[in-house]
Image (cartoon, rainbow, N blue to C red; front, top):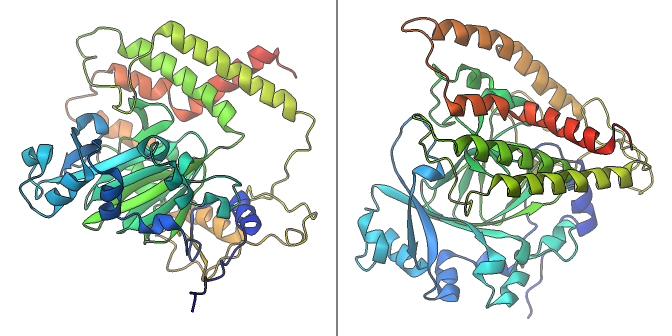
Length: 441
């Protein structure tokens, strides 16, 4: 007798509707039954990739009270088979032999499936993002991540798109923070990677004497299990750590209309970073370009990129100018238009046994399960009562810095952290687009 395929809790159209209305992270359960990608264990992938070498990032298993950026890691080119033997404490582990398994974790991250399996394009169909309402989207538009316990990505936000993450093997713990907490995460563009704004805080072991604002950051923590899919909304900060011996996950960044404007901001950032960090000085000697960036581009190239980004954004703005603006409620959520049957009437996300919200840790014990605007309002009110405001903290930090030996000298990176703060870049982006359009459309 043929096995009965379980019915998915949401149709592609329903899932897409949910994603279009979600403004907080959430986990989809029971949506990946029958996906061939659920067989993509590290062992299975080793057989698919054979002797192909891929790059692994290695970091020490130690607590330093500071993020371990990719510029500070070691790298090896090895096969997945060698990686697996290394995790099993075997001897024939190739380049891993220089890194004791008990002292290091390893991560094959940001592996683009379109390149990884370009000789096996049939594997693209193993990942079915089309079931989330993105017609025709499969593994070709995704990346693969293979790691050991402790492997992590430093806390950061992605300037482009939103994110869908499928957990295949093992578990990963996600620490997420809302965009409103950006100041409390101490954003930096060093190391520089296009589309990634890093936090200077080690979110697991924060140095609150150096980063006092972080005390008020609202952590939303979830342990992602195999078969589950996490939705990360636009501009949510996230720190991700593997907590099982071997983990495998697949993610896809979903493009958004707002990305046109974000590309202008990224072009501005790149031009400023490259210009200032390429200038020779006694203190400007750090490794500032993330390994994910192939090479430093020239100022002419950066300005050409900036002009193209501004023109593209202005063109999109002109096309959308005549469209009816989207209406939002007091929580910033899209108001239903009343033209689609189930989307008319009172707005409600169908949280329950198939869709779980990722809750703020401080409120988890007190906020009842709901998808309403009131929980978001409650979150903001709670943060206002319990957390010191950034302005007050700025004063406190200034006082602390003036105690003792006095303030330290301002470095190039300090200057860049101010010049390239997301709020500043957002305003510069607006001014550039206004200048290009003559202040009108």
